Length: 259
Ligand SMILES: Nc1nc2c(ncn2[C@@H]2O[C@H](COP(=O)(O)OP(=O)(O)OP(=O)(O)O)[C@@H](O)[C@H]2O)c(=O)[nH]1
Ligand SMILES: [Mg+2]
Image (cartoon, rainbow, N blue to C red; front, side, top):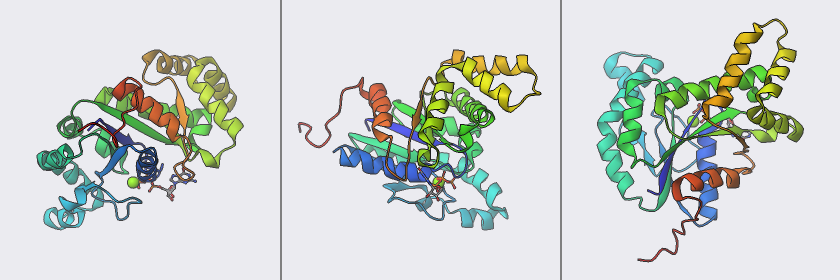
């Protein structure tokens, strides 16, 4: 593996679509890329998984064996994944010179807050790991929605302590000028604070000012990358972040590497 990219974010933000589109984009640029599905509850995934957790774990069987509903079964499945980590890692070891993209469950808390998840990430990777946090551009385009996204991103950051990329997916659904505003909130906490105060007149100003400034001082992320997984836009910018981290900015030509 050149490196691994874990794609996370709230339900329905387009994680699976992003994973498939990112793999396609990388392959179009002649890089080797693979997607690993880590969502045992997915009925449908919009890509061909190179490795699929559903080959190891059946959510239906867990529900039956443990008399659980779908969410309880997802919790058991999240813990069971660790047991299969060694076998999955053997499959991953065959993907030499690949960028490996991991699609994670829709229930974001299963991947981020379970005790075993950080261990799973460590067991599946060789250390070069980034986390892509996907927000929905419509949700993230109001100041309060943006702050809520940033707080969730912060929870994930403090759980894993890995480099993070903040992606506004579904950028095709909002106007470019609104996206430009969202991008400038990331760089300018004063602007975010002012716009937030315009939206919510009656809030406790000091508290929110502290929260907003803490984001920019934390160094968790410092820019937003707008992406449309549907229209395949923004992937060059995502790749630029990824390759900067994994290879120090040099392209790794995996098609024509010397034997
Ligand atoms: N307009 C638009 N729709 C998108 C985009 N990316 C994904 N979608 C749509 O959003 C819906 C959810 O996409 P998924 O990829 O299944 O989202 P997910 O985050 O994997 O969903 P869960 O795993 O269930 O949490 C689908 O209808 C996608 O077609 C995008 O960039 N633009
Ligand atoms: Mg999904």
